[in-house]
Image 1 (cartoon, rainbow, N blue to C red):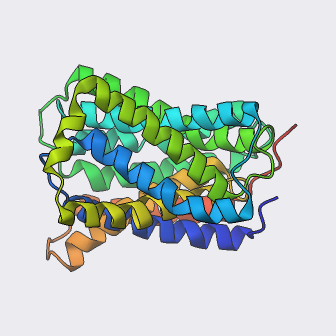
Image 2: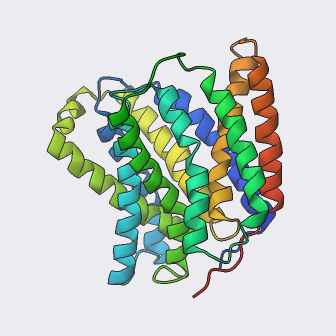
Length: 302
């Protein structure tokens, strides 16, 4: 059973939103000539290895073959999401992928209803739609009018978004079965380890591993920062909250990250907000308030 309270879980996800927002600036410091799939594989591997000593001393690594299979599937979902994102960014803009990502909490909401039918979703439909609408208003102001995104890119990234949407509710479902009693640290370690292995395999197949020769000491330092704060800490907080608050509410904190990035542009970069951004910020705040109020997750059926 997860020892944290609903309030602690939500406060942890508030920190998650801050770390996610800050990660975009840290990621920009890493050399852009290096294959992004390789960079993500290294981030996930570094994050997993940082947890390894703790789990080794606490004895949290051992598991059954069925548990190993479940971790591999969750790791595959992570790899599919990141792989689809980088493939899509070759053909479309970050604005288009960001817009599509706003659908992930809604898709998570649907998967939650399928995998966790007793999670009490009815009271969260309206705040979910309100927060999603606000995030769209904050993101779309950066799009180029009249420019249609690549159908191939949107299709590929849509598949990745489906994988990410499935991750949280499936993780909670597995924690009620073969992964019952697994700590957030153990869940994070195993899922990231498998995710990194799948991404390294993709690098070998595509030849992206050759760009490893371009890595500098500065790149490795930023990768370690990202591994510790933007990957390890965020996934630990996510798994800490899953099962205490509903999976769709957990992933909806990405809307708060979008709001924090917008506030940064307003306050520190001096960009004057548009009327649509004011409305978007208000809708995100109202939607998240409604989600947090109804965020207590019900028990998962056996």
